[in-house]
Image (cartoon, rainbow, N blue to C red; front, side, top):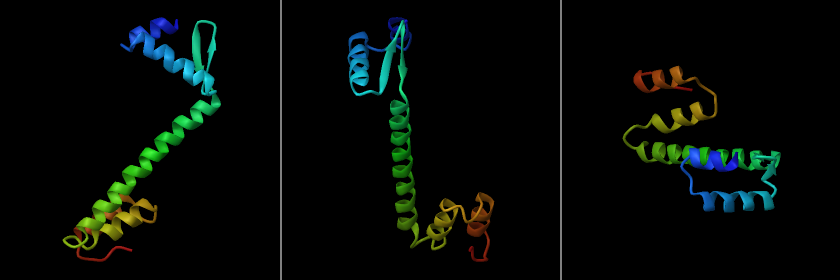
Length: 103
């Protein structure tokens, strides 16, 4: 079953088995009859990596907003309020397209 899954996904068989072996040694996956399963630790590490990627992307958005602050002075504070959940997307768009201040 593992071999069929590897082939179906177009993965290199030797590399996939080596990766699986490492994941098992690290406690991130377990081999069971005919298939492999991700452990709770493996799942947690997967989601932690996704969270790190989202934080990095959000950091890029913040740096972009700060870079644009000179030409669009309300962009950075409005994005900050939106990211912190203090305003809705609709309110953020309104703040940037209307003459009134957001906050």
